[in-house]
Length: 618
Ligand SMILES: Cc1cc2nc3c(=O)[nH]c(=O)nc-3n(C[C@H](O)[C@H](O)[C@H](O)COP(=O)(O)OP(=O)(O)OC[C@H]3O[C@@H](n4cnc5c(N)ncnc54)[C@H](O)[C@@H]3O)c2cc1C
Image: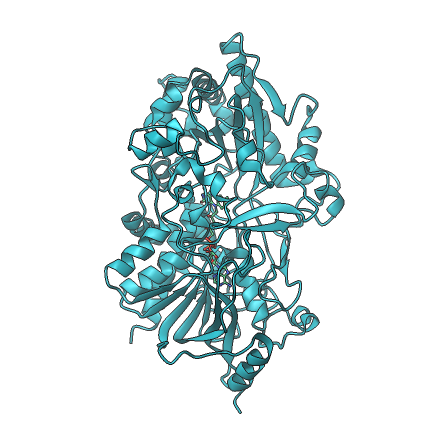
């Protein structure tokens, strides 16, 4: 009996009967996961003429308001039809996690999307291209010239063919006195400090404050970043079309509707990759999946009945796009990973690839929350925090009238360097009229319970912490793995480069607030987070160390050269020491790209489609 057949026999014993439905055809490619990585890749491969199966654990929730309405993005992360909740550990020392105000007995909440479109069905839709230096570094790390920024530009254009982006209506902020005062204070501080902050905010002969306010109303951040202009005050482009969420899900559905050979099966949870181990190296020949609603334990609802396991065969490749936590989990469950860990879990080793699940990293994000004297005008009439069909702001959105719900609430952002000597801006600081303090159960309602809060969120790009690790708890494919970021474990938080940059961001935002107070006598603008007791750089670093969060986790199956032991995949997305198996999602970046990760994933996904298509051209 061949080892594949042995494997299937074992799977029958473990998971019940594995069926190969007679009607089930063999596909060229089986893609697992329909998020930012898998969705565009499956669609593009089909458009290039391939027969593709896309398996997605979640359902198509495009009909739900929580999917469509940009302002509901936080609500969507707490909806059982759209979200998975992982609980993670930020620090190696759990005692530090316990001091985080967001800590729960299970750990710290880390939401993800599980639906057609993956996390792009729940994300905040911010769509920002990475600077050229990120692609050029990836090119050096992998030795593949195809990643050079000049080459990747074509993929940015290709993404723009299916992804619409829009900027928030500038009059929303302009018509809100408190919010506008805050923005003009930021514009004036950035203008004054332009020498310190680098050349991007410095235009000789033009009043700096006016210039900054002008870019806020008119400039396109992506054009500016593409042109190498990395600093200034901008709105954040978001993936909406006529004020509705759009992107990965729509690209997939449009591809199917246009008649390309793309089969999409939602509600299908993949438990294992199946290998033919008689081939050297072992060749992936398909995946085993079970149909059912909410089968994974990170789901928020009651799990439904699971179908019998079914084998879906891939003639060419199995492509894992299950995301930063699930792609390494699936590899390990299938026998690809660090030998010692797999043996400890009682899993037969198919390929010893020690870096699987390593190198986990994220951006560091904190917020400075201010209490204003009066409610913000933007949300004054809105009943955000729940879906209420009598909500005047929702009624405006439904009638296609301009308003707050067409936006994700992020009305302005400053792109700056934390240190003038840095080659690129590394802080994206963005503003929202809400009380945004990170993720914990119930956060989406709390953030907008009152309308007099204003948050500047400080997001550190190009973070250096990469000590995080994903490990299996056990062999149960429905159980989520342990997720440890192992960030900020230094004795002295200020020694951490990422935290030092965040400290500069907090101090900059405090200067915005000071300027707003002095320009707008009367509104005391009380800082509630981090608060008046957090004064020195050491205080701020210690506060950020315990309160920081992230939602751009990446890099757990890093790309690299063949002789790089830190790598899981090569520059053609092929998993080392196997054949017929690739990974394409947030996990393949060796370093976290840009300030927002979705656009780099989309671009990489488009490139992956070209690379794979070329390989099988003849
Ligand atoms: C709350 C939140 C806000 C965010 N905001 C932004 C933002 O504004 N801008 C930005 O650039 N980025 C943002 N991100 C990050 C960005 O959306 C993600 O990094 C990106 O979508 C990751 O893409 P991916 O393909 O790796 O995984 P995902 O998009 O997460 O997709 C993975 C998919 O695989 C499916 N899957 C997993 N395991 C299996 C299995 N075993 N079988 C079948 N299917 C499976 C999942 O159901 C999911 O649909 C945000 C993320 C979150 C959670």
